[in-house]
Image (cartoon, rainbow, N blue to C red; front, side):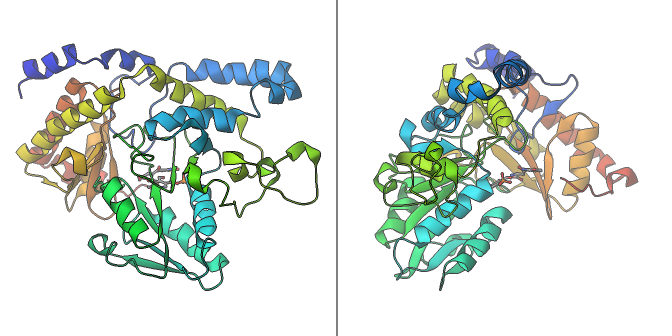
Length: 404
Ligand SMILES: Cc1ncc(COP(=O)(O)O)c(C=O)c1O
Ligand SMILES: Nc1c(O)cccc1C(=O)C[C@H](N)C(=O)O
C-alpha cells in the first residue's frame, strides 16, 4: 500500500479520535499494548481523586460510596466486551488466582472426572496454576498435549478443558463455539483464558455457551500494570460452584463477621479479600473508554492493521507464524526469526516497541484504539530497513533483558 492509501484509511477511521484519549510518548510507536496497554489520559486525574478525595477526605466512608461494589460494577463494564451478562463477570485478584479458583471449583463438580486437559505451550501461568490446582484435589491430574490433540485428549475422566482463546505467542485463535461444544459433549467444563482476546477480537461467551472464563485487564483494556483480573461464570453454574479461596469478601454477609463461611449468591462468592481500590480506579478509567466505542469498528481495524504489518513482514522476507485468516487469530502478529531478540532490540532503538518471546519470536501488538494505520505502516517500514540492512546483528543488540 502507498502512503496515500494508508492516510486515506486514517482519514476514514471512526476510531481515530480515540488516540487523543491516550498519553503516548513522542517518538514511540507502541506495539506492545498486548502486554501492557497504554496509559489513558484520564487515569492520572482518576487516581488523584481516588487518593486525595476518596481515600484522603472520605476515608472509610468511601466503602459505602462506591468502593464495596467496585468488583461487580467493573465486571459489568467488562461483560459487553466478552459477550456476557453484567451479572456473570466479577473483577478481582490476578488471572493466575482466578484460574486456580475456577479449576479447583470445576474439579469438584464430579469425583469421577479428575483430569484437566490443556495445550502444551499455553501461557506458562495457566499450566503452572493447573499443576498447583490438581495437587490440591485428591486424584486429580493435568494432561498437557499438543495444540492439535486437545480435543482428541478429552475423555470420560476429563473434568475441564482449559485453553487460551488467543495464543500469547502466535496469536492463533480457537473457534470458541465449536471447541466449547466439543468439550461439553465429552462431559467436560470449558474454561477460557481471554487475556489476549478481550478488547482485541469479538468474544461471545454466552452465545458460545461457555462455562468459565478468566482474563487480564492490563493489555487491551488499559487498566495499568498489575490491574485486577476478571472471572466469568455462566449463570447456570453460579449457585452450583464455589470458590476454594473462601475469603470474607465472598461471604454472603461479610459484615456479620460470622465464624462459618457461607458463599454469597451470584458472582460475589468469587471474591476473597479486600479489593485493591487504587488499582480499581485506574482500571475503571480504562474500561470507561470502551463505553463509547463501536466494537465492530475495533475488530475491523484490528484486521486492517494486521494486513499492513503482514505485508511489511512479507516484503522483508520474515516468516509469519500468525494465521492469515482474521477469524483464526487475535490482534497481534508474530514473526519467527533466529535473531528475534536482536531484531526486537533494534526496533526499540528506532522507537518501535514490540516484544520478544522465547526462543525466536518477534511479537507486535496491534491495538486499534490508539494506533493509526500510519503508525503500523511506518513501523513496518522501519522493520524492513532493519532486516534488510542487517544492523540488528550489531553487538549492542546481543544483550538479553530480564523482562522481555
Ligand atoms: C494468556 C495469559 N494468561 C495469564 C496471563 C498473566 O496472568 P497474571 O496477570 O496472573 O500474571 C497472561 C499475561 O501475563 C497471559 O498472556
Ligand atoms: N504481566 C506481565 C508482566 O508483569 C511483565 C512482563 C510481561 C507481562 C505480560 O503480561 C506478558 C504477556 N501476558 C504475554 O503475553 O507475554
